[in-house]
Length: 270
Image 1 (cartoon, rainbow, N blue to C red):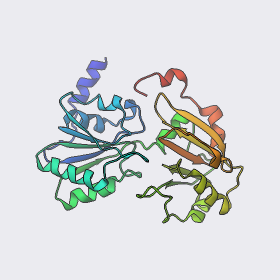
Image 2 (image 1 turned 30 degrees about the horizontal axis):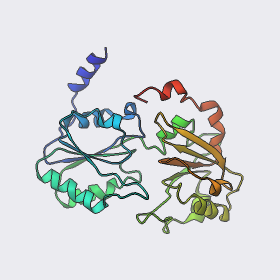
Image 3 (image 1 turned 120 degrees about the horizontal axis):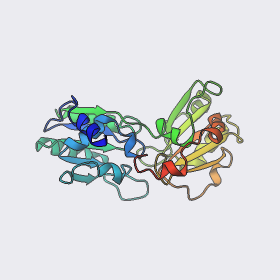
């Protein structure tokens, strides 16, 4: 049955991945089962994959062996390629006539700098396609039993990055406005600066006793969840990353909705 389904997908009317073009593709929050069908198609058609550090080896293994894989991951506190160099490489590879798959964790347009790369490709005259992915801060949190909205607790949610391009707390973010904007705040890449961010939010009126949940490796077998409060967040040490921070009342649903049991975690496809 599995072979039949793969044959059907292989013959599906997917868009052509043309030589000399770049596809910016979201790989989702971890498990290969959370890839879109269009992402799966791109993996099978690409000549070269330029991938982030957060793209799992299980996902990369879905591409044929002959496909060139180029690591272009940026991780805080570690030597990382510069964004400008990554973008230049994408353009160079496309101009060589390659089918270039730029593979990103989560969604390329959700704090993934996909917009910057797409703009550079457009200015260089390189054809491109955007393939959305499941964001770890949205659909990925379902793997920790955390609905980002629930009719009984919140009708709004705000997504914020926890660091800027220099690695510091984003100075352009109006933290008092964020504190008031929605009952639920979802923070990306915020573990390093969690003490400073929590202080800003408490200073703007959020309660120190408010629930704060940190989900590390959201849709992977090594997922871990830490439940604390906004006031205690600054004392945390050695939190695994990558991680998503969720502040607000939706934490109350985890006890009932934490479906991602050990049996599911052992399943390679998520």
